Structures are given as C-alpha cells and as structure tokens.
Length: 446
Image (cartoon, rainbow, N blue to C red; front, top):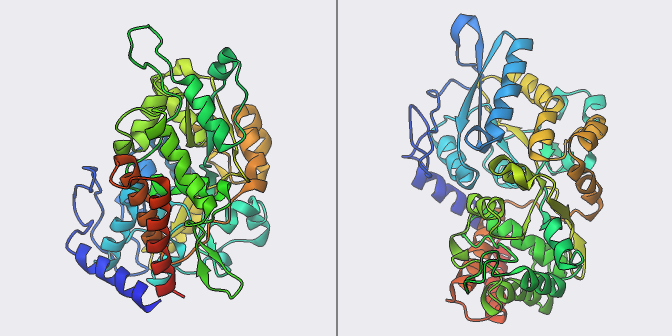
C-alpha cells in the first residue's frame, strides 16, 4: 500500500504545474476553465448574490450529454435561485489526471461527474469523505442498490448515481435477421457471427462493413471493455484468494481465451477494421453510426449517441449481456461524487439530490437506465432498449474497488493495444505478460 501511495503522490507532483485555475486547455484540447481556488468550505460568489456550485466532468463536453446536463442545470437553478452552477469540461479519459492536478493545487470543484472506479484511490488521497448523513435514508432506499453500491467504498458513500452506462454486447439486430443468424452466446459464436457479417457490399473487392469494432486505444475505455471479456471467460482481473490476498486469473487458460477473442477477431479473421489500436470511444461510435461495423462491446448509451449521429439507425441495435463461460454485464453507474473540501457543500448536496431525481431525459435520449427505482416505468416506455439492460443487474461483474485500480487498468489496456499492434505475438504471450505485470501490482499492495 505504501508503494501505491508513493505512485499517486509522484503523479500528483508531476502534474502540479498543470492546474485548472483560469482558462486552461485540457489534455485533449478541451477547455477546462475553473475558478481560482477558494478557501475550503467557502462557496465562490456569483452574480446577483447567488453562490456558485462547480461541476466538472465529461458530460460538459460530450454530445448529447452536454445538452441534457444543461437542461438539468437550468431546472435546478429555477428551483434553487440561490445557486448558480458552473460547468467545467474534462474528457473522461483525462479525468483522473485532472483531479490529481487540481488536488495538488487546492482547486478541486464541488462535484465531479464520474463512476465509482476511483473511490478507493481518492479516499486514500483524502479528497473525498462519507456524505451518507446528508440524505434521508428513505431517499437513499430509492436507488437501485447495485448502482448505489458503486458509489461506496468500505461502507462510506461519496456520491450519488444518476444513471448507468452499462457495458454489454451491442448488435445490429436487422443485420442478424437478414443473415439468418442468432444472437451469439459464446466467444466462438461472436467470432463466427462477426465473420459472417464482414461483407463486401458493392462487389469491388473491398470490405464495406466489418462484423465487429474493438476499442484498442490504450485508455480506460479499452481496459473496462476487455475486463468484461475476462469476466465472461471466467478470469477476473482482480479477486481475493482463499487467504484474502489480491490475485488475478488473467494468466489462466480462461484469461487466454479473452485475449484470443480479440486476436481472432482483429488479426486472424480480419473481422475488425484496420487501425484498431487507434479506435477510442468516439471512433467506435462513428464506425457504428456510419454502418461500417455491426457489433461492439459497449452499452445502450452508445445506441443513443449513434442515433444522434444517424437517426436512420433508430431501432436497429439491441443490447444483450456478454456470454461465454459466464453471462456478464457491467452496470457502470455514472453520477457525481462530492469532494471533501467542496467550497459549496450545501449547494453540492442540493444539486446531487436534484440531479438524481431529474435525469430521466438522459434515459430518453442516450438509453442509459436511470438510477432511481421510481423512474423504471418511465424508462421502459421512453427507451425500450433499457428494459433488457435493467434486467442485466443480476449479471453485474464484481469489479473490485481498490486504490491501485488505475495502475492495473493501464497495464491491461497497454497490452491489449500491443497485441492488436502485433508487438505481442500471441494471445498466450499477451495473457502471460499482462498477468505478470498485474500480479506485481497486486503483490505490492497485499
């Protein structure tokens, strides 16, 4: 654990010069303008005597999420005229480094839009604290327990979910029916279906539509999707063994099977467009929206983004659990976490509660399932695709919350990328190298 703290502190010191004060360009060229640091617990003043609430995250700069968030902010400010919400845009892939930088310079905002993956690391950095006492228990009981659990660590609650962004298997149902194919229920069947759906549509000798898209760019989106494949194969990336020590099954025969899925699709069969190592989330959505690929590991929120880009895709996609040895899904609840030294704690709590109860438009537009049980029927009517995803809760993987999660995920993403690039020559070698590196991280934290 001491080694992990040192790694985090080193990263913080390295990034300390890249603060979010004033107008800054984020790592991806995104404006991450933030107000100057405030004294802890003191809200920044706003026009008209209102106090400011700062909310940072990817939904500020991603479409259509940005429009939905703006609507929630408008509704909140109308209901709470004493507050003004300031939005700070940071792409999801850059969120962790931005939080580390802002923590070092004491410029953290009130709230960050995220999932619960970094709770353990942020708790260890002492920048979040338990907020359970800020809410009535009856209100907390209104969340799907699987989603609320993701915003806790060691029984402490650090934020609230507003919706889920599940990882499952997306498929073009219309293309499956045209080809007379069933929904695949194993890795072998996914490979076979992808091969069948990789076609030259105009007879010019070039592939026009590929069966599958793989996110090979070495970031957290890559790692999470591949981790879902590991769980489906029966090879969890991190688990507690019989002695209570952290261990991994990435190097097992089951782990090799997950790497082989990617290898067979991209390298052996060519059922994936060339350049998979550069495919990030935006690229994958574009491939799906422009009819260049038929399947991907992602979620119903991706369907929403596809339809925004290409309305003709409405009703063509379905989302199902990923199946191999096990049937799995990752609910990946998204919402907001409040920082321990939030300048406007009272306003942040008010915005958290309002957002959780008023984000149903996110379901209508992006197909993300809502976090509140009371919104289930509204969601089923507004987005029929959500109904199946709500049922996926029973397949949710045990994605262990640990302080070194980011370090482990980087290893997974980099080695998946290396295998797709050809610098790691086989699934067996990729599984071995990944397992050795991950186990070294686990041993340092046992």
